[in-house]
Image (cartoon, rainbow over all chains, first blue to last red; front, top):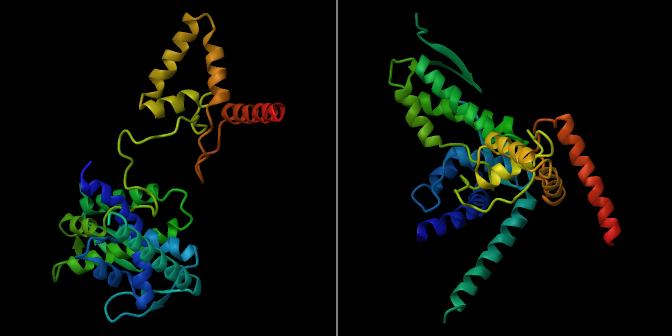
Length: 107
Length: 188
């Protein structure tokens, strides 16, 4: 098993956390999220992002509102709900904990 | 005779597709629909995707041209990527551990053969024929093996929004669950 195949599920699992982080920083629409992740190890596609955002909305972590755009049809702008902010904070804490654990082990 | 173009409404946009483009688009949306089977947000996701396809194609259309062909659609779909259900692994790699379970959907009796076929990656029809042949060869003894497997193998969870069960699979499933409950009581 190559390193790449071991890391793929980790990246996949982290995507939700990262999307919450991006949505938490600014109100964004899908192209903003794609652009923010493009060029990182977490580059993703609309085919993945739309189902994920729908799931987050169903879990009441994000909500969206329609906003007119200069070019083309109106867009959905996503932002975090209070529950979303709480979950993002919890995930952030846990992520820091994991990082500390990893750093401590093997020393 | 050939259709020159097909007018397609994608969410809020209306676009012309040539025949090849139209077929490719239909296939993409059908695949997406299948992947999202049972997802409560399916219709919403499909609407979002339709809009994404429309936006991408519009952006790629050369100035003055009105008909979307594969030249625009293929790279557009490439960029949007196949639909992936959140939480699901992209594809189950061969040899990944699948539980040995009876499968009620599409079963003939209880789903033992279907479950075994899925577990071992065999053709279910061939497995059923082999079972019947064994039944004849063992003078009916195979029935006991089938009943034992029926009682022992857990049932795969029903797919959400899946097809309704046939009469026999539904009956045998409730019978097995009844017997298991009785045995559970007896053991306790």
